[in-house]
Amino acid sequence: MSATLGRVLRVSLTTLGGLIFVSVLVYATLSALKPASEVLAVPLSWLPSTFEWSNFALPFTETPFARYYLNSVVVGVSVTVLNVVTCTAAGYSFSKFGYRGRNAVFVIILATLMVPVEIIYVPLYALVFQLGWVNSFAGLIIPAGTSAFGIFLMRQSIDSVPDELLEAARLDGAGELRTLVSIVAPVVRAPIAALALFIFMTNWDSHLWPLLVGADDAHRTLPVGLAAMQANNLGSAGVPMMMAAALLALLPTLLLFLSLQRRFVEGVTMTAGMR
Image (tube, rainbow, N blue to C red; front, side, top):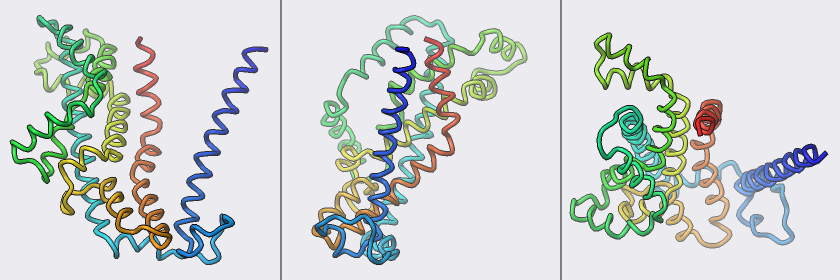
């Protein structure tokens, strides 16, 4: 009885959370289609009197929104690829090689997860400034090129790859790079997909670091660009455009999650099952 009640409670809470998320998304979509005069009107109305589809073109015609979009794609894809490469290689090293100090280094990397990222921004910005990477894609991409969480995830995943499989590859003459790419990576493709999704979504929504090192129009990412648009379009006239811009910014992460949903669940389940 208690198990049944618990299941009913979980399903009810999950359904309630889903309804709240969907209702917010529907309201934002309908608000993006309203005339400016109806967005903040009292009493509140869900449906617009006329559907203003042109509101979705305003971010592109009134602001450098396309540039912000392209910058976010470049930064998000580059950071994701770098993290997949570096975290998989580091996870392979920590999992399959028995060199001295391996566990101590891994513990130090894990300990960095306890440090709030805002604490390292000042020394990291000073380093990036001295390298001349402020207002450049190098400053946006390279400092985010690896992550302690990704290294931990990939080490836990690669632990499941049998050592006998790696030994067989080495006996066939494969080097370590070929073993990693041809043997290990296909076995842990689900955790790699989960890592890629985590990293892309985190960097797509990141605001503070891109604001520090990419504040000019040529290097603004979407979160920084949306904040600038909001500051320059106060009042009800700019609300439909901001709603439309926010929905357009949401599309890539939503499509990526839907396309990698099965791999994402497999990766999380595979990693959790090994503990």
